Image (cartoon, rainbow, N blue to C red; front, side):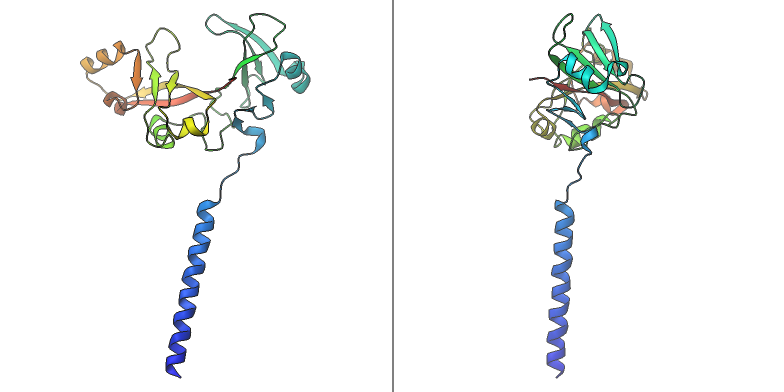
Length: 215
């Protein structure tokens, strides 16, 4: 009788352990789904698709939601929902109207709700970005470069590149600790920077812009 009870207890405990493992496994494979209204993907950003023409964009959001700009570096672009957290910049391949082809979409509001399926979003620091990239380094143009400063030029085959082949980004230098002048001067001379540079341990760098490229 005692033996039967002992066997029953063992079977019961084993069953509970297995059930616990199954629950843990299910939790691990459960994926967070980003709201489609705020999803950054190769198709576009939220409801704004990368294949829209200006006419389609205007029809989608209405003329009042659009503001026209011109930048000496990037050319003419259209801002949607300007001065709001949902702000989007639309850069065109054409130099003048009619705009038919989007060059890239850009989100850069500090309060931006947009993110990729793997949680790439505005404000992430450099260490978090490298971690999300499978611990592969990021290559970017120096903050002192004459053009496209802070632009990420390569994810070096890391996870972010594999998951988001059409996505690029821009980094911003937000603050720093004390650094040796010689190290600082040497850093300024570099046009291209790798994220493993030692001086970056003393500089706070964050993702300030995410771009969806029209490939």
